[in-house]
Length: 528
Image (tube, rainbow, N blue to C red; front, side, top):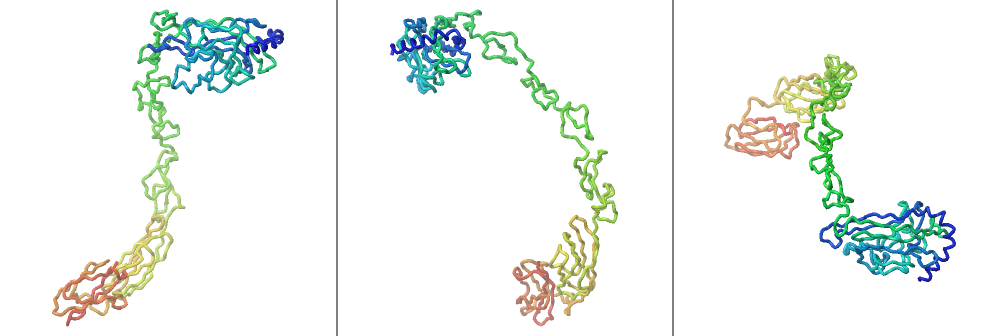
């Protein structure tokens, strides 16, 4: 392999000699960054630092082919080495180049592996995406910070993605974890603009790095506080200050309290630059109606309190006969209404609108005006769609149809009676009461003078209680008749009894009591 490495550089020597002057500008030298400093007291790595060394480029398509030394070959380069007199952290010492033994999958259980010292070409772990570099002619892994090579290299085949400069214009070539000053030297072979027919070699000057600590003591500690100057953080020490810095190690003497104030944007004294609420928020002094077209506009208000009264807003003028009440341009609440005194929805204060006047015409009730007592008769009133009808009778009972324009009435007694109706239309407007006067002809029995028993309740729904005022030695017969005279039920009773009427049809009925040896008596009952 060593012979092959020598042949590789020999084959490229002619090309290098004619291209070195024009392409050296592609490689911009090495830079080093301190990635991690270990300060945990008592740890194995206390005062160690992990450094990253980068090869920098001016073209993102430039790619590293090898990091090498050819001191005894045709290129006559300086040796390749990492020199760390303090020693290096090197838990994986099998190879000087990063290899599969340092996979990131191991770091959770072997965290010290992450900070291993190694040479690399863009690979930061053994299982990172890309191609692990190969090594030839390199010192063993355990000599990485003390040994050197005059004729060795780490290299990749072709151009894997980890060898490209990329958008950062740099490629990692080494990680060094040590506890003191150190230096690095190596040459680099580059494919210019990813052209494998255009390789150049560069050998930058020795890279020398000063470590912040020597034997655990700061190299630079101007204020003697034990914090190296490189790690000093200037800031405000006062915890209540707006710019308090808990990480500060040097007092900047510039503590600021201007951040105190009201943080609520809805407050009158909101402070847009404040970051700490001092409890001073005021919500009353500037609250009011901020709408310039409102009836109660407050030109001094800066916060709208939702009280604006604007023409066109809904309101209630208190007039039950007006509709669409709104605040008028004069800031008066007023609705629209009918200005006709003859209408049932007349309004004297509303804005006149004759189209909403509501009228109810009156008609006559149709039906028998000379009914016979204890008969169920039908009566009607002209129907208007959407209207309801309220019926009231004297000397009679409305048995069916309440609320409609057609009802059944059971008349009782004798002489004058009446049936009245009041119409209420769909708009809620009620007309005048219309009445029909009737003259009731009594039945052929004397219902008024021959009262020998009492019935209750009436109207009834489930039961009727019958009480005979005068005792009879014999049982009396009780008949329940419908208005056509048909016997619906018959009973035998002595003095009092209760009969079940829950299964009978609702309506008017006649109870006929035949006491033994006494003239029959009658009672009118209603089932509802």
